[in-house]
Image (tube, rainbow, N blue to C red):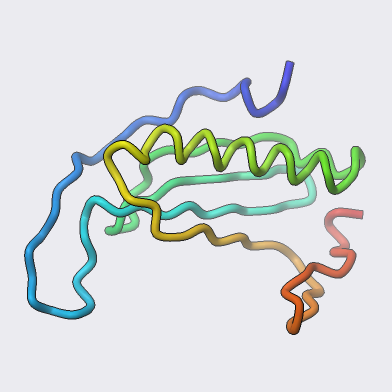
Amino acid sequence: MDPASQHAPAKTTRKSRTVTSTHPFQRRLDEFSIGVDLGGTNLRIAAFDSEFEPLGNIALPTRARDGHKVVLQGMCKAIRQLIGQFADEHSLTGIGIGSAGPLHLPSGRLQRPANLQ
């Protein structure tokens, strides 16, 4: 069984609503973002509303020993699953990934991070 399918379904904790404002930095409350924690042992992906309240999350083994393609496949599958759960009621504003380095800044690529060896 695929590890990404072994988690409980994410739950929506807030209703979608829009705030009307003339302030240029006012965020719409029906937006959401996704954060990814790429760890050496676990991969955690979570969706948050525009007030940074959690909408849902997925945790699965990183499976670094199976190679980078397997890690990326698990990450992408979980991201697509969260997008599928919340895109009908919310607009995706971005996806952020946190990982240990080193990071090659010009290309934005991880360079053999120790936690994924």
